[in-house]
Image (cartoon, helix red, strand yellow):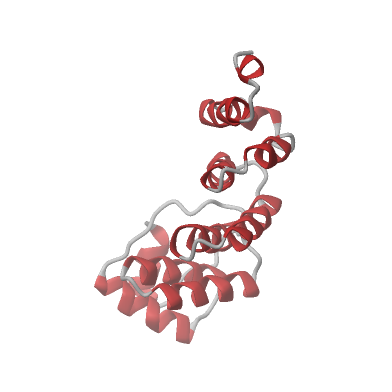
Length: 168
């Protein structure tokens, strides 16, 4: 809640550590107005990232995309890249861009389970089972033990005719 409190009180948005996963979102019309001003007065990667989230929630997809691109330009961050990947996956249905942005996101934050899940789901959406199995080799062991990621791996093994390996 702290970033939004700061936005209301000072008109600015703290820059935060780029490695910290965003903890909260506020997408009200009021916050849209505040973030719109903050982007103009105090642009930083974090305000642009959240501005993109707010714009997306308000159906302003192209403006959200531009905000996330600008956020990543100012400071490469896994969160803007992840949102761009989801935009390309879910809105534009552009597999190559979705995968590219997920790879960029993962490269910056290899220890984030939710990013690995999104990465896996992108491969599965496009029925790229063998490709996911290759990528899954790069998952840190502690994250690879996650139940959902194990399920995705098993699903890919079954879909590629390796059910007995999936049962292991």
